[in-house]
Image 1: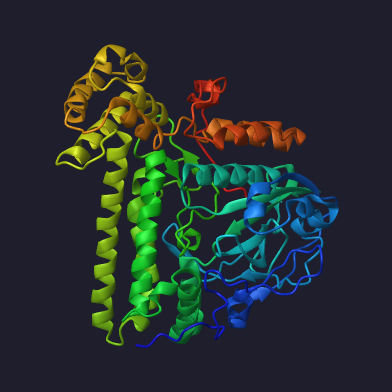
Image 2 (image 1 turned 180 degrees about the vertical axis):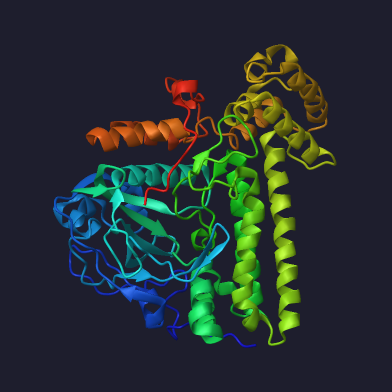
Length: 516
């Protein structure tokens, strides 16, 4: 099996390569390497203009990192581009085709039904980034949808993606939020919005599934070569680059899902078409963050069976990776049985890597710097007690960070979170015994714990408060205030204590929605 190399027959996808088309002065310089792939991989489509676009928020720091002029983007000319009312001369807009297993059921054609990929830029780190307009109008993959987005999901995704980035979790980013000046019709008329989204790419497991079902082995090889060039160039010289690709995607996915669990994140709809092969959190829909710890927590209104519950995400990710492996089998080995055996070994490695990353994360969350036997069990015991005592996940770990490592007399801030505080007392005795063999001081331990245990997360009721204000009165001040707090989630912020608290009973949000 031989690697075909770049679909472009040059090095334009390599980190550090500019790869940008000529742009008119004052325009956004874009290229679209995906448009160089076979036409069956996508549909050429331009954004549908909107009536009266208005800039809700521009991510100026991200724009600068992308090598774009924030002042230009905030200008009327920039707004025209971000709203889809004008396509830059250098752009080759398109909607990507993909398929997927949705809640375990095969759907042979999905695709970008309300998103248009304008093109790519190369950021200041030399990395290629997609710029996509989500909510930009109908595409050939819209089916019966209008291709638009309500302002509510735009606000939610902006908040979520930027908060996840601040938490240090791999994610797509929000470049800008736009109000369209039009209404969309869901259960009721709502103000329309567009999200300018940035990603390492928008290639998904479902992209491979679509190409495999339509184009077969040759099509999958073209796509796999493209992904290797763009995301994993070091694999090009591997003895078996396609098996190495499966392993690399598996490793990034294991790391990603472990990082989700550390902060209580629930994606909500982990269909294969929502799993990025670049290892980024993709497609924020009915997501949520755990308040009171329950490993079986489900928020998504469309997940009636709990398929994508908090504690099922690691296994679902592996299931999705198995679907990716199926598309790569003909490239991994011409002998079918040998290909299956090699892929199975990689997928088994996913489980080991996830467990390692998960246990490492838990060890850090309880303040242990060097792994010892029994550490994972100690951390898992705390989670079990939290679940049985209805303790808030974020507050428990954050307040634990500040407890004295030798003296239990100041434990009340944590004890009061537990319905059965005696269970925490018994655990804390074992925890302090374990801390006693750590070779670092109290100040260092507390600082390390605060660096991994956020004080603030995007709690569902806070997100809903920002969404309601935006939808009901186009008031984006709650969104702005929340962004200020969530952009520094690991810092103590005097005066912002209310943002760290769990919801009151009347504030609890038990169902989240995808917003389509």
